Image (cartoon, rainbow, N blue to C red):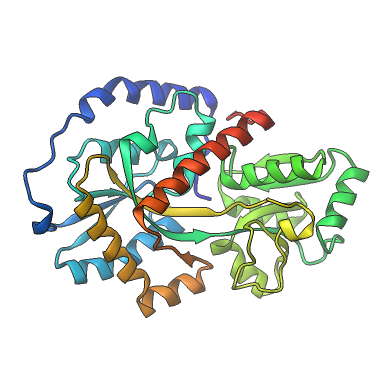
Length: 334
């Protein structure tokens, strides 16, 4: 995923500075406007990553459709840095009126699990609108890698404890956590090698410096289809439609293994329910359009669209799951 890699001390310093000013942010009154008049001015979607990544792509794809159907421009505002905290902070300063939305990835639930002083309570400070898309991860290897399935990979790792290495796009990313969870479930001792992004990790995988990695489909799909990578498994509970012949990790003996990386829209808590429902309906319309569906399919993205209450429950469930995983495996940002 697109989570920046930071040291634990840097996380704590940033979290402390932001936490000290939170009290003033959450007293901003909402604009006195009836939800029936919404929207009467341009909307802004804050993307906590640089332009060009999957989150940015999804945000721009739906914003075009939403701007047309809502009659107001939907502006994308990239606010990268701090593992999403900078973006969340920007939205937290705005009125709870639905005009400023946050578009995080699953970092919204993994980072609170990893950062003891995370300055936001996602379920208290923000309200769910909907999941825009899911990007599954695949466990990928080089085409000439001797293991043809997970059983063979696990056998290799057990025969050479600590000598098999997997890469990730950085400490604390979903790729790292997926790799740690799989190693724990398989009872293997492997070496985690964090990189500053998926690109450098993929280069070393192809070069043979690491043996496997969990890679999101937006990066993996074209490489797999071109024969440059081979997928041993996908991480969600269900098979990925774009690679129907690749079995899940659960199917290969690890029941209950289910990691779905989601990307969704949030608003400030206190936003009128009617406004949240209108935003959900507009996103659903965008996701149902042929243009967006074809774009998502080409990028390995599964469209979302779940109702706000269902997304809110997903956030709560994932917060508990990742906190439990981090605590059980003793994962720390280093």
